[in-house]
Image (cartoon, rainbow over all chains, first blue to last red; front, side, top):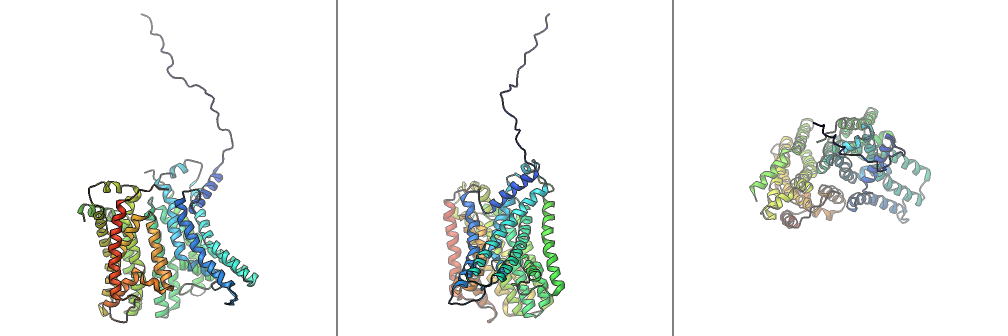
Length: 301
Length: 238
């Protein structure tokens, strides 16, 4: 009885000459930076299909039209103005409807799609920390909204320079307005991202953001009008302004940047001013904390 | 109208988290009205101002927007509308069934709270509450039909609908009087004007014109939505 011959090897791994990757491997910072640029371009539809560029570009155009008209009016000699017909710092409040639509359309685009198509687990399988993802998305949307506000402001500024208004004064004014625009952008981006990150459905995010901004602004304006003008209690009317993002940042501008208020009533007195500033930073910090909490665990389902 | 489609749409609309959002909005309106009643007291001017700008100006359009697009948008978005469209049902019937759900949801969550808020603030005096509730009712129907059409036509229905509500009715209507003639809000306010005590509210549109325009807008939007649904192409996510 002889032993069966050993069965020969049935499978072999051949070295067919694939090379290992030995180039540079970029770390966390590079990934976060790439995600930031990708998100920022995505907000304006750059690098995406033509259809996704229509809406953001249209809204950017709509944002610029009033600024352009203001700049033209300033330059028509016959009217003989010696200042812009509208101050820089009020521009954001004047156009807040467009700003809200832009945010509602683009914030869910930025984060909900990652949840819906389950790309989030892929991101976090790279050396990318939670703080990098949240930071990149937050920064990208803030910069995008800031650009949406800054471009019309610069159009107005150029208009003012062409009309030979005092240069120093206008440079200082536009610089302050740009600071205000940055705060507007951060508050809007924060609230928008928190709402959008709750849901994987784009439509739901859009509806949620619109509801929060439009309803709170309508309610606050109406209450301020009733309490301030019909009842004559401007202090209470000022405090109500804390409850809508638009009037909140408007109050911040009034107190910190010395702007004229666009709401019915500005922040009441010194205590009110401090409260508006604290609330503004509180909202930004709170949104950051909520986003960090949201991405602590990302469901694979 | 088809009972099964109505049932399915109703369950999709009220089953998820969307109903919580809707409920919160209604409660906020009633809560604000109660706060005003307690702090300001009974003041018919305040009631008219508050209901006009918050209820008719913001709540009803937002509801029409969320509900009108909400009854069909998610299905078009995720492609499951094909299962409904492949059934032997006339497309206008599908649109009509969905419209019925949208209108009843808007009536429950926007018209009733408007009436309650009006009663809380002014009681039955001058039929202010009734006037605004009537306006909310007709506006609900018109907004639902228009935004349902938008949802069939475009994927960005909520955004374009909002652009209409905020920019056309709010911004342009504020400066250009002619724009007010073509605004659901003004048509609705014209109904309030005729129901409520004279002098409470004024609208730029005569009642007859307003009613004709409301009916025309609603019927035309529903008819065209049915037409568009027959040639619907499912867009891919970009």
